[in-house]
Amino acid sequence: MFTGKRFVFMALVCSLVVTGLAFSPGIVSAKILKIGHILAPGSNQNQALVKVFKPYVEKNSNGSLKIEVFPTEQLGHAPDQVEGVKLGTQDMFLGSQTWFAAHVKEIGVATIPFLFDDREHFHLWVDQVLGKELMAQLIKKANQRFINLETKWHRGPFRVICSKRPIYTPKDIEGLRLRLWPAQMIQKSWAGLGAKIHTIDFAEAYMALKQGVVEAITSPFDLVFPQKFSEVTKYITELQQFPQLELITINEKVWKGLSPEEQKVLQDGAAKAGEWYNEQARTRVDDTIQNKLLKVHNAVYIKVNRQPFVDVFRNKILPQLIKDGLVEEGWVKKVEKIK
Image (cartoon, rainbow, N blue to C red; front, side, top):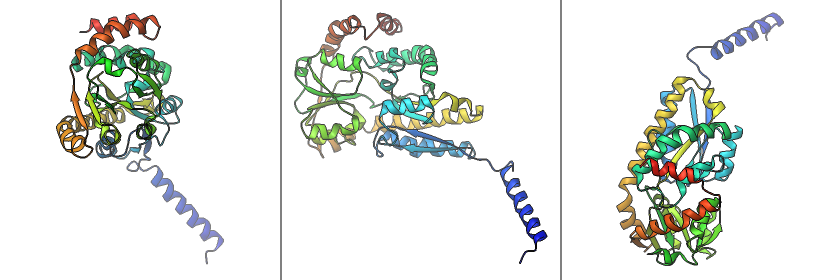
C-alpha cells in the first residue's frame, strides 16, 4: 500500500509525465477537418477525397491535420452544408458551383445552359472572375473560400440528360417532367423550353424517376451509373449544357487558423485529388457507355447537334432571364468579354 507521502510523490510523477507528453515537440494534437458532400460513397468525388486527399493531407502535414469525409448528405443537404461552413459548424464542403450562387448571385451565371463556348472559355472565367472578385465576395458573404481552383476538378466530365423518352431537339423538352435543384436561374432556363419543373432533393431523385413522379433528370455523366439513373430511364442524351467544377470550400476562420504550411498541404492535396478525379472521369467515359449504360442497363446513348439548343438558349431564354432580373447583363458581358 502507498503511504500518504508516497502517493503524493507518485501522483506528481504521473502529472509530470503527462505534462511532458502534452508539450513534447514531437507530439502534436491533430486538427480534425470534417468535409461533407451529397454524393454516394462509390462516386469518383468521394473516392478522390478518401483515396487521395485524406491520406495526402494527413501524411504531408506530419499528423497535424486529420480529414474526416462524410458522403451521401450525412451532414445535410447541399445548401445546408454550405450554410454550415459559413457558420463554422462544418469545416469544409465539396460541391459544384451551383450551391454557392445563393450567397454570391453572380456565380449562378456559370450554370446558365450553353452560355460558355467550351471548357477553355469557362476556365478563363474561373481564373479571371470566379477566383478573384467572386471569391472575395464569397469570403465576405459566406465566410468561406475555394481551395482547388488551380487544378480544376472537371465534374462529369460533362453533363447529360437522362429521360424516359428520347431527346434530339429543343422541341422534345416541351412537357417533360424534369427534376432540378432549387435554383431559380436553372429552373427558369429549362422552363423556358417548356419543361415542367419538379424540385426534388438529389438523394430522392432515383425514387422519383422510378415511381414516375418525374421522367427526366440532368446530371453529370459520371453520376448516371452510380446513382442508377440509367436503370430507371432509357435514354441518355449528351448535351454538355454547361461545364462544371467540383469545388472545395473551407471556413475562413478555420483557414486562417492553419499555418501557411498546413494551408499549402490542403491545396496540394486538393490538386493531387483533382488530378486523380479528372483522370478517372476522362478515361471511364467510353467504358461506362459501352459496358455499363448499354450493357448493364440496356440504355440508349444519344449524341445530338448542340447548336439548336445553343441558339434557343442564347436568343430566347437568356434575354428573358435578364428581363426577369435573375441575371444581370453585366455578368453576361464579362463572360463574353473573356472569350
